[in-house]
Image (cartoon, rainbow, N blue to C red; front, top):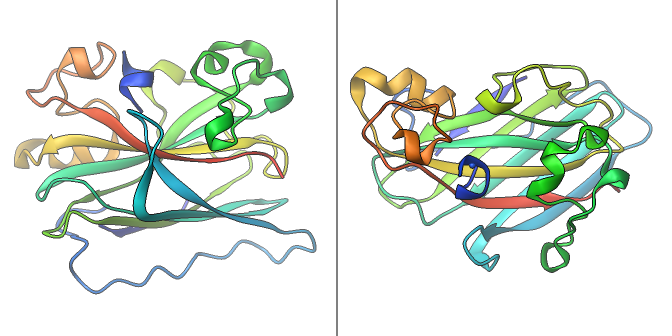
Length: 220
């Protein structure tokens, strides 16, 4: 996986680089996978997980080829100096999902993550420190079969099995104010810096973490 720094939910938890802030000039050129004949591209709004309303001006784009996916994710509403991470939430067999979310066009919802027939994965995508504007932006890629850092509740999950067939959600999470001695873990894991209550019991830090926003990409 390649991630480009530029600036999972209370629904998943109960559900980057150091020094890079969004306010610095950035290049969000999407990384390239091998050339493919069949490419699907979609740009969707980013929504708040609290009420599924759209984040004003925020968008996420996902490009699919048979070898993998690339993305850009641009949003706002985070707090200056806080750590924000982005997570792949992959439903490899959305035809087996039984909990659609029609308002965001998703065939799959939280309970489907725990249906073995769905073969779901939750993995790290990117992390950054929020700049003064409160805006956050990431770009990156994930190849079929690639395993990044797992959400601790999904250790051993299969990753992305088929880029053209999976429903993919991208979830943006806050880890609260940067704690310098925990900086690397906060930028690269689900739980570091978080209280147990806000990390599904996995964290041992002081911050109240939360999954705040997401974008959903149904299978094309």
